[in-house]
Amino acid sequence: MVKKKACIFISGKGSNLNNLIRHSRVNNFPIKISLVVSNNKNAYGVRYAKMFKIPYIFINTKRKNYENGILLNLKKHKISFICLAGYMKIVSKNLISRYKQKIINIHPSLLPKFKGLNTFSRMLKEKEIKAGCTVHYVNKELDSGNIILKKSFFIKPNDDENILKKKTQDLEYKAFPESIIKIFRKN
Ligand code: GAR
Image (cartoon, rainbow, N blue to C red; front, side, top):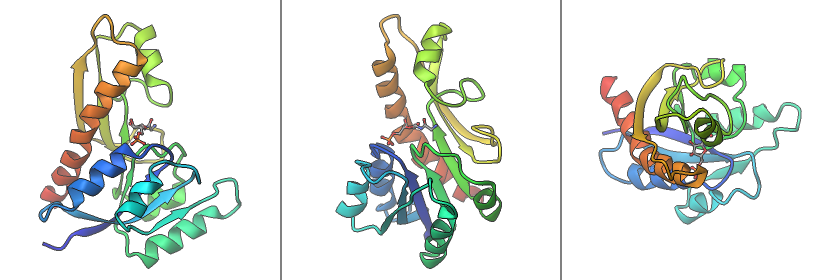
């Protein structure tokens, strides 16, 4: 099987990156991670790229035309699929239209509920019954593209933000790889 060359965008801890790298090393997993992009020089997650000898680049989103560097590198590494794994920047319209239906994101809520930031505190405030994660295609509206897969759990009375985050991330480690398998099985 020929694996699609994928790029993972991160901003921080990179636990989803680590998980995806480990899955991608299994023979029949549909993608090979060929590039990591970080908008944060201090992102802990970059060490996973180093550990597994995956090329990585830093981008400074404050710079004008910073996207040219991304596009050049995506081309250089023949990237055909992009996963946003805790990437805390909005992806430009230009990149989205160049990679139409080829960019997916993982979000820590059951979309369409709780788009954007601070999902866990908002869920607690609104006394939600369920929490979870969603993997979706990225389009021009924030956290609004077609949904690929959701995983959920019931919120318990003692669940605080940290517990919700931990439970959500445990589900993310299943949802992200399952979504990728689902996408490429269809094609
Ligand atoms: C993940 O939980 C992901 O759902 C969230 O950031 C975390 C990154 O964790 N993404 C967003 O909030 C995007 N709006 P990680 O760096 O350990 O993978």
